[in-house]
Image (cartoon, rainbow, N blue to C red; front, side, top):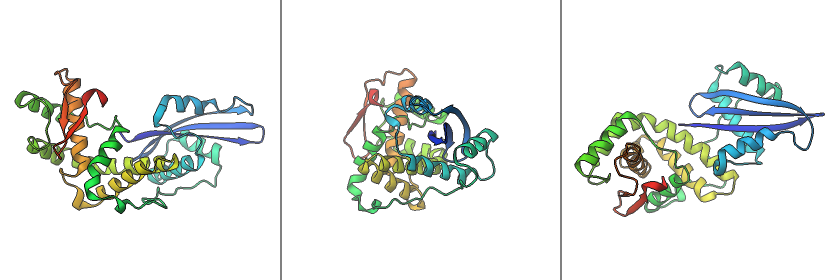
Length: 259
């Protein structure tokens, strides 16, 4: 849904100041919580709790990434910042911390280096690493049921009209959300050494910012739509748990339990 948590811990004199910020890629800061403790070996445990909750989706020990993401969220928030967030930014960084937009490019990464023929496979791998990136809107459930009643499992070629309808009536309005999520993940993956994923995410983010790629046949849109329709069928209890789907290139895709 475009939300993630950023935690940071700093030592100031004999104190350890630790805060976790809930961030939204479109609206900026949502909330914050923190602790001020005496400096000790166990101080800053809030970061460990945050990392455990995030599991494999966490980048730990990269303060430069945390600062960059927080500065980017401050830029998005403009003057609409919850008081608790403002207080903890002041406690952690002091008055010198200022907004700085998250750059759309990363040094050393050339998104144009990805051959067009590779984009479908790269999108699949990328979404494998972001399994919760599903659109589960009422329209998606409605169309998933329509496909089930008519033909069973979603197929991008056979159900092209359904895919286009979902895109034109819903997904097109969410492309900016996905673009910002992809940019966030590109920076996260780059800072954790997952350069191939970072390159894929940056390439997709760049393309989604260009109107010529705002089409239902874009590999990212097709893969996201197929996964979302399968998930909607599965959640509706319509026997899609063991279904496989065909991507728009005709090859077999993931089985639903892997979503």
